[in-house]
Amino acid sequence: MKKQKKYTYIEWVVATAVMYATTFVVMECFLKIFYPSLSIVAGLFRNVILLLLLIYQIINYGIQIKNNVLFFFVLYSIYIFLYITVFPVYKLDDLINAPTSVINFFYRTGQVLVYILCAKTIIKHLKVNKLLTLSFICATIPAIAFIQFVGIDALQIFGLDDQNEDVLDTLSMGYCNGQLVTLGILFYSKLYNNKFVSCVFSTLFIVSAFYVIFAAGERGPILWTIVNVIICLSLITKNLIRYCIPVFLVVILLFLNIDTVIDGISVYAPRTAEKIEMTVKEGDTNGRFDLKDSKGSTYIIGINQFLSSPLYGSYFRLITNHHVFKGHYPHNVFIEVLMTMGLLGFIPFIYLLLVGWKKVRKTMKSKYTENQLACLALFLAAFLQLLTTTTIVFNAAFWCFFTIVCNFDMEEEQIKNKIARQIDTINI
Image (tube, rainbow, N blue to C red; front, side, top):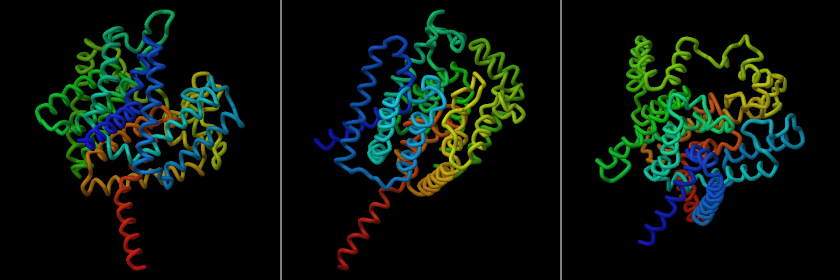
């Protein structure tokens, strides 16, 4: 009984830590707007959870330094530290999603390091039902409450009042709930011992989270959630065509009747319908792929910045006179790594991605665990998001699950090493 209590305790610690790295951003924003004092308490509680996680990792598994992702993160952090201290270009306050001070840099870097060092504890003790429950409370419910407060049609264009521009970030709302949709589908009948109960709660998670994604009206969360689900289902069933063809046919059917679809959506969500129509008729409305627009595309600005210093990198944020993009991240993880570290960092980054993908394929072809599937889905959620928005700087979810997918066979290697040591001992 004591052993069971011990594992129940660490399961809640792990689920809470993962929730803080993935879906808590919605609740964090909600608290900052309505209950600032509770936001501080939530931040302190996160530190307690990470400390408990680290202590458990040290006691039970020790600290595994032989970790390629850890080395890469440390190297990346050194680059960032040099950019904000020795080689500053902009004031820290002018940078988007970057450290606000040197102290803030070490504080947030330390948090990410805990996630990387505790990868074994996370993959061994993660319980999807506990994570989904916490995420539903901290991501879906606050988002639904806020949507009802401001109205679905005004969600993206109005703040709380004329003097207060604080709003819940619709991208965060969409991406966080996209993770709930993905996990809800992958574990639809496996969350609880009772299949009926599992299906009921899975349906609740999926429907509620999908409503938030739809209400937020952002294209990225909708697209990448679908892609994530297809990739995961294809890997576990070894049949990509089985899932791609139906999705492709549905997309074609909707596209052929796009006017009717948009009219139907506009009745309930005019803003969402407007963005869908813009995407269908204008394509890349952000101009990121416009090769002719060297000043109005973050991708082109980022690539040109990389070319200015292709070997060592130049800076971790866009260096431009364009007031919109000045000090911003390039909205693409590959361009961001190229800008920041040049080819010296980009080549190891690609190598680690290939190592991770190879181990994922190998694991999914054999007998995988539910935790491995969940961690893979969470890694893909972070990685796919990084293809079009946000940044890898202090992105705990990305670094944590990047470490895990690159070490899917960590237990298998440990067993082999243990057997090898026993054989050596016998020979001696």
